Length: 432
Ligand SMILES: [Zn+2]
Image (tube, rainbow, N blue to C red; front, side, top):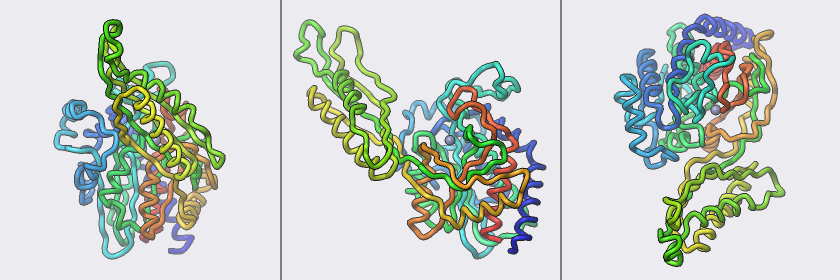
């Protein structure tokens, strides 16, 4: 394909995506209304599977693309059952969230695109200038809100699916569209990677909408400073006893947890790069006059590199176990999520740059953007790269209103058209 062909091609795609903008917006708003948090994306998965099948994709669902024994940080079974019931008709036959659509057109390389589907645990703003509330598409589920733009990611993914299925678009090879559950907390990519979903992939790409620093049409071609992180749950088990009658018979789990929290926050920083520690949730005890026999802590450690994070995680585990020993209680530590660092391949960054450059006045390239956060797409990226493939992660500007994960998060929906055009363009560029 010549540069001129590519430029004409991407402009045609941009027009095709823009012509579908009303449908993309309606889809995004439907998903926004029915926000589902990590591992409860039953309705979303059902909707995605139905649309992919309608466009002629072979569809892998749940256990076919998610390895159950590698699932991290799933809510309790009773909550999953309740959420599945609430998901209604679309989610009725979804056993486990997660969908992959596969479309093949003869021999050629395999390109995978990943779209995350989960909402955030945020109570959405009800009024003021918050557009989802004003225009009637705010979340109908209290405490679950698409406050990170993943509703937009799913809409983009289905827009790409529709365009790539058009018989007049010339490409050869195989496309895998990966709709991932539970990105928040770094929980969903790991079991999909372990299911081997990207083991046959030559080129991988993922995107994220928004980020306050990016205006509509701005595209950060390369993202750096992905933080490596470990999310851990600790549960201490002690012995209950009368607080005044026989405290010496008790084993105090609450005190062990408190010592652990202070110890975690007292862990030394690292001379080789940034580190972060957060004890986010602590629950303990059963009654005012009872020596507390149970305590539960959810915490995370992050590091600028995988090595720094691994060192910090080992030190954190030592603190949690040491605190248990100090109070004579038992402790169990469970991994609840993780992210790692990754770098995009320069070849794919350059291809994306050429696509962006073909739409002057509408799209504008920013060469590099330091994320300073975690993202579990990095697990897919590193697996693809480890097997000789190439990977890309980019940010799509959308005039995001207020910060990600805030109760008033929203974005300019014209970015949906940009996302569809760029992702489809990338596939055609690689398989054309
Ligand atoms: Zn996100």
